[in-house]
Length: 368
Ligand code: G6P
Image 1 (cartoon, rainbow, N blue to C red):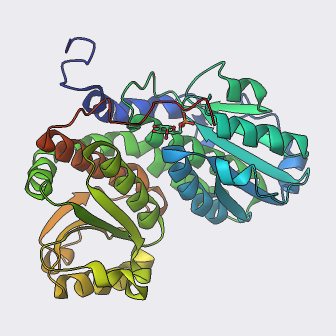
Image 2 (image 1 turned 180 degrees about the vertical axis):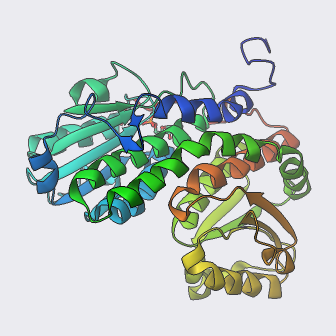
Image 3 (image 1 turned 180 degrees about the horizontal axis):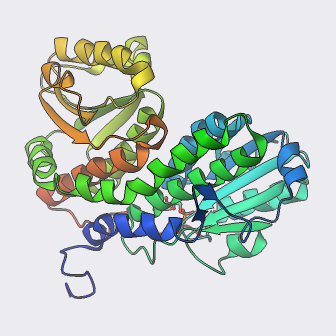
């Protein structure tokens, strides 16, 4: 019935459109006067926060991709060294964990077997564990020392969308909370970031308004069997998530590449007519990204570029452009992922596959 899908054809589409609300709800009550307050959810004292020597993000699938964003975000905000691992690797690789290690497990369901096992291993070795999860009372929530709930609401579609953006919000909140205690950013700098964070929900609505254009591009690309996503920095982390989304539901083979790495092999696969989705929202590496796009254009790629509002340059290099509203580079993943979710959705529909129940995949993997 479309009623339970809120009038949409599929849960995935409903959930994509619920993102502005999920973002708002995850922020709600956790920011006061430009300051992040997680004292309700995190029991670490100021001294303990100052004592953190490193952070490990551990997760699977889409939640792992949120952790990849988390690595850059927490290193930037709190200047603490961060690693990010897939849980099935982490639990078996004998990672270096001490009582000064903060392990952040990210899990929509809170029931993923590998993530839970990694959490237990980390605790056994003395780490402090924070869980970011969407399910109150889940195994991960119960076993972690502290929990930050993502208020995305139930996610039904196998392909995760609003859970991911809510996980990002939780990560920003955590990063800001630690940074408020640790420095080196000033209170003013941090509250400036908080202001941008609070604007994301409305900006996400603006991104959703470009649905028609994205649908058109997706339909025109849907016959291809191979596709590339390119980005640098945080754009690369989002490229990985966009590529996963597309593979999960449309069964188009795609690869996400750190754009600067392309020339070390993969460029050989770029041939006439191959679709490339190129994210170019990170100012520090913008020029480098544009040269990477020129490299694939020169080999005949058909490029959809993702740029920031006000960027009138990228249009000259790519075939089509989608603009995301202006925010700071650190926060773009919340906005750039939305066109990629829509892209995967429309490619899937065009190819005639079941959006909400892709073959061979489960919403939650509770066995190893
Ligand atoms: C499954 C789902 C993915 C999800 C992953 C982790 O593989 O198909 O969409 O990202 O599990 O799930 P979790 O509930 O731990 O976030």
